[in-house]
Amino acid sequence: MTTLDPAPTPAPATAPASAPAGGRTIRTWRTLRSSRTAVIGLAVVGVHVLLALLAPLLTPHDPVANSPSHALLGPGPEHWAGTDQYGRDVLARVLYGGRYALGVSAVSTVLGVALGTVIGCAAALRGGWFDDILSRVLDAVLSIPAILALLVVVTVLGTGYPVIICAVAVVFVPQVVRVVRGAALAVVPADYVTAARARGESTWAILRREVLPNIVDVVCVEFAMRASWVVLLISSLSFLGFGAAPPTPDWGLMVAENRTAITVVPMASLAPIIALATLVVGINLASDGLSKAWGVDRIREGS
Image (cartoon, rainbow, N blue to C red; front, side):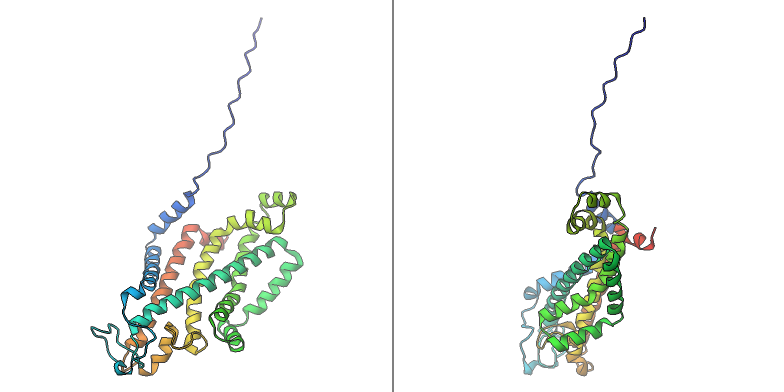
């Protein structure tokens, strides 16, 4: 008589091991540390932020106070970078100018990238006529040079901080929309997005829960890349006389005010140029390292 072996007791189901919450952040930080250009870029940007925050402690001079008796002085113990034609300390104006450049640029970039991300994801999710019309509008807007569009806006609405921030953000929205839309189109056909649609979730819910978490790397790199362009664009506006109003300590405005005296006090023009150049180079190096850390360069190449 054969005996039946007892049925094996099924092993208890175990949930798949999930990666730690900070696993991706740790991997990204390790990749950044392995990239010399990324480390240098982050260090340069960090120094600029630190100098801007500590400006009141680093210089005793008022960046907007005129002192005709100290006009056009060269570098010395009292004024390390000299003074401009109005007797204002150049170093103080450069340090405080970093606050304006970083603050206005950061707000403009955040606003532009946020709007562009929402519109780009919505276009990828909705598709159809909405996507077609939006694409044609973007093509028309992108055919206009950014600096020309900004000049028209500030000429009509003025040169206040809110106007400049909103104008710069709106000018960069079409470019962000095109990049984010391309990244979102690769996510929309995924099964989890299809399942969310089958459950009847709203477009906003799908965008927030399913699409955005899977393209956050592209959005971060886009933010870093746009930040460098925004810094240059705002400084260009100030140089042309459509940005910060005198006596605001702004790098572009400093170059415009002191270019006629560059042979007398070259540091009054060279100091803001060096500050602007190093900040832009630092942001570009950091964005390049971030794109490699997240693998966004491979995404754009379609691999």
